[in-house]
Amino acid sequence: GQQVMQIPQYQHVQEGEDFTTYCNSSTTLSNIQWYKQRPGGHPVFLIQLVKSGEVKKQKRLTFQFGEAKKNSSLHITATQTTDVGTYFCADLDYNQGGKLIFGQGTELSVKP
Amino acid sequence: KAGVTQTPRYLIKTRGQQVTLSCSPISGHRSVSWYQQTPGQGLQFLFEYFSETQRNKGNFPGRFSGRQFSNSRSEMNVSTLELGDSALYLCASSRDRGQETQYFGPGTRLLVL
Image 1 (cartoon, rainbow over the protein chains, first blue to last red):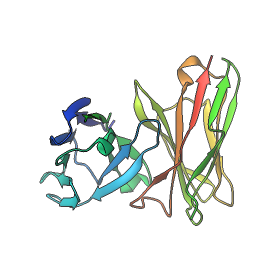
Image 2 (tube, rainbow over the protein chains, first blue to last red):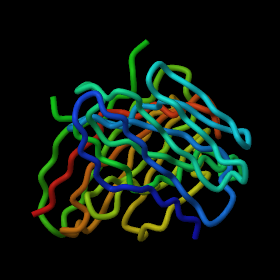
Image 3 (tube, each protein chain N blue to C red):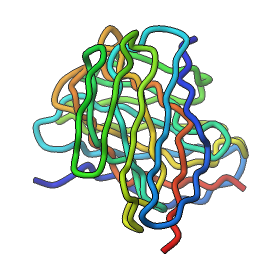
Image 4 (spheres, one colour):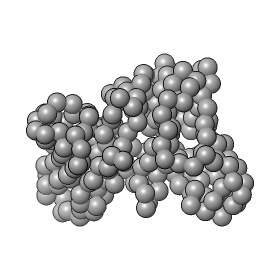
C-alpha cells in the first residue's frame, strides 16, 4: 500500500537554530497536510499543500511541495522552545474521502 | 465553537474484554475518522464515517468496529482486547468528506493489561 516516509525521526536543536523535516513517497502524493502534536497532546492541523511546487509560509514556518508531488518539507527558521513537538506530514487522498496516510513524524526538541 | 470531544480520556482494560470509545465531532461536521497512535506504528487510519455509513476502512482486524449516529456522533468498539491494542485512539472530524482540515480530539488513551 501507499507509504509516506518522513525523516529524520528525531531532531535536537539549540534554540535559534533552523530545523527541517522531509516527507517522501514513492508514489505521487495527492495533497500534503502538516500537523503538529505537542507532547501529551493531539495532532493540530498546520497547513495543506495541493499544487506542484507550492510554497506556503506561516511566520517562521515554510512549507514546500515538490515539483513531482512526491516530497514535501517543513522548515522552521530560528526555532523557539514553543516549537517543541512532533511534526507529521500526511497525504489526504480525496479519492478515499477523509483518509489520511501519516508519515512517522519528526520529534523536535529545542534546547534553550 | 466547541472542539472535538472524546470520552473517556483514559481507560484500563484486561485482555479479552471489550471497550467502546465515543467521539462527538464539532457541530456541523459530518465526517468522523478514527486513528490509532502507537509509538511503534505511528498514526494509523482505522475507519471513516459519513452520514452514518462507513466509507473507508484501514487494515485492522474485524475486532475493531464503529458506527455513527444521526447526530454525527461516533463510537468505536474493540472486542477481545489484546495487549497490542494499547494505544491512543484519536478521532478527527471535518465538515465533509475529503475536507481540507481535520480537527482532532484529545484522544482516549487505552491500556490493556
